[in-house]
Length: 556
Image 1 (tube, rainbow, N blue to C red):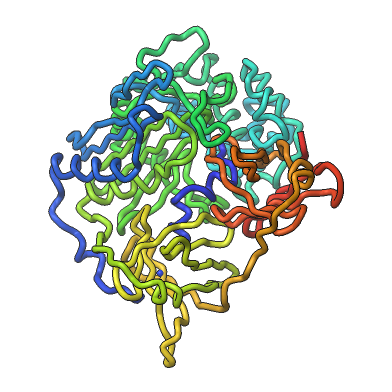
Image 2 (cartoon, one colour):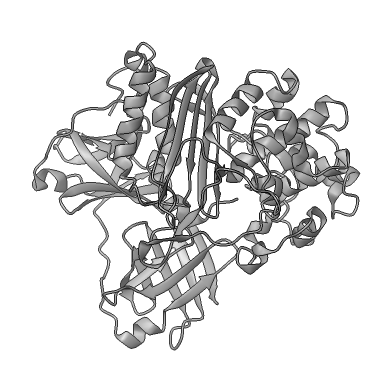
């Protein structure tokens, strides 16, 4: 399912576009002999230690493999908070949008069998679908079809998503919605497109879209209502006050081919081998699946897969987020490395950053890990300011004795000094190095997304702006309380235990809100502001301003 805007903002992975000194050491210098299973296991435990996963809280299951060799398979946390059952690495989780690559491969298999063509129009299989003659199978697979994603329809992710629907009924939910753009003209992540992928598979085979999974010989399941799946763990979300609560209800008929599957670590490993090592699809189809084309090139999206790079190597990956669960599946083709992560809670943990560090380590190209040191407050203050690169900007600020970085619209990231003018992110490998002018004043910084490589230059262009922190009356606070909803986002504004204003989006930790005015709240957790209307009386709407985005939500 498609993540919400603030989920990205709160993710520590936002730092990958957040921080950058000329390259000090070539990337090849960090390469080393491939670590054995014991070394990978030790490193995995180090990463899990940093996450502070409580034994009585939702957990994380981890697998790292190199070819046919299992390097580590482990889990921490609880499979059921209610029963106190510990999480095991063999247990099963909702996969969310990792499902998309399975659906994509099932359709491509039909193409290989001559039962469909990627250039076929949607209308060939769903004749009644509006403008279906202009939408090809390729457009559905790579998110360039332009139809409205049903998960973005106003109010849909509330009660409507709890209904059991057939494929035809689900398609009717979005087929008459206004389109986002003309087919093939742009890219936008789209769950409706993959519902249509499932519908096409059903039209061709005459069977439910997921029945083809039985041919995969890997235990990935569609959770039909009458089906009991052994080892299926419970899913959780952050409730009011940041405490864990049972995940919201959803009928698994609704995620469909966009996100409905259930699997375990071993099944994802075997799937990577089956898909990427040539046993499932013909070479031409696999090449199309893993090669971004057309409007999808800028987003690095193939068919159900993102095509990226890691430490100079090709990286093929996709994550998933659905009620109560998060997942990440990565593959490094050069060394046949699989990293699979499964979590039974939504939001709050950066699986992408964890997986990248594991994959890099297993590939013998670990991210730099310099020793940290302590700098005096006066030294840190010298680095404060606003830095920009084109239209993008970030703010460096000292908070509670530590230097932090906050990209425009992003999350606050703590930094640790590794030199007099060089810092590393505390949650990942990214580093920044400050530069000075002829007068020894800080003039800019360089950002290294992977800790080394060629840095990006960001120019210092001003001091930090000052924001008010007003004390609102109880009446002013009460006028803002409530739940606000739009097709793209939802947020609840409420009073915390100490009477302070708080905000929370579904599946996200709660965050404190400060007042810049009676109708303007902001948070220091991310660079985001809530503007309320009208100017007097009970607020009827709230507009989220986060970076260049403006999302207006109506009070429910």
